[in-house]
Image 1 (cartoon, rainbow, N blue to C red):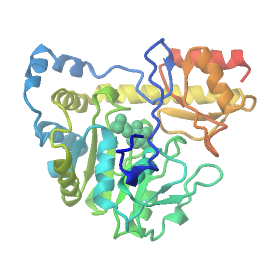
Image 2: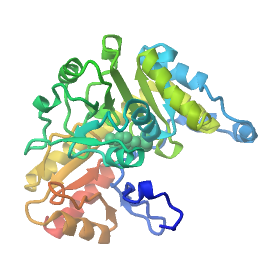
Image 3: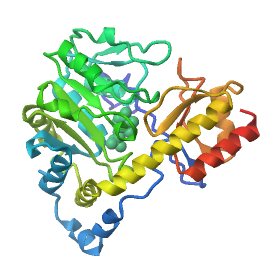
Length: 352
Ligand SMILES: *Cc1c(COP(=O)(O)O)cnc(C)c1O
């Protein structure tokens, strides 16, 4: 830290992203990317001509992209906004709906960025402990005097709440925004988007990073009442009006339009997940009921940190969190069938 760095952020703890090694080829099961390339329509759309237009700014209103997303979800365009990954959209939401006096409430075990952003924005956190089995204790969500973040399915557990359970949270907190982060919902969860019509305090955030194979393009989106979306746009236009670049806009439109490819990819990942989970159970692994594109697994024979290192030596990268209640486990992204076969073989070789 230089002597110029603001004292107000001296305690800031940046988020540690999963490794993206550029040296050797790993079987990468550590950052929940899709094992499939983007839709062929995306590849067709981004040609020399589009690249040559990069001297022009992108449309700050992202009209075509927002139109495509709205159409896909049966919403009006003013009920949708987009950002540079859902990380940015979520950050806009925290900036818009939290402050020193309006904390953010979220699970003690969940996506690590929320606490980092609270640190960056000077927003207090209200941590809601998961139960022993990592399930959500809904009784803690009654009348929270806070903006509420629900990660559904949760990360890194993969455990889902039903829309009816989320509706209980919405009803219990009518005077606060409830943000539902649906980064993984397409792999077996049920989306809350249909509840938007009935709850003006619901903001649903999704991403093209996981289920639409566009992690590197950086595209996320929020859906909610026109008023909530206008609030997010107020932040966006005060920060970076051109937050989604031209090529990503095009990629997002084409990915949204290719429903068949989306279904094929998400269904394949879900099938591979369930098959891998079965195989791991046979090897005495403990697993949560993950509906996401990752498994949250504990070997009965090798501690989490050690297993992570041994797999890395064998060229397989998974995610290990060195934190209470997480240290015994690994978060393993569901890759292709071949990658999961290689993982199971490596685990057997290691005696896990
Ligand atoms: C991956 C992820 C995100 C952010 O994804 P982007 O790539 O920024 O769209 C948000 N929330 C959760 C829970 C995630 O796992």
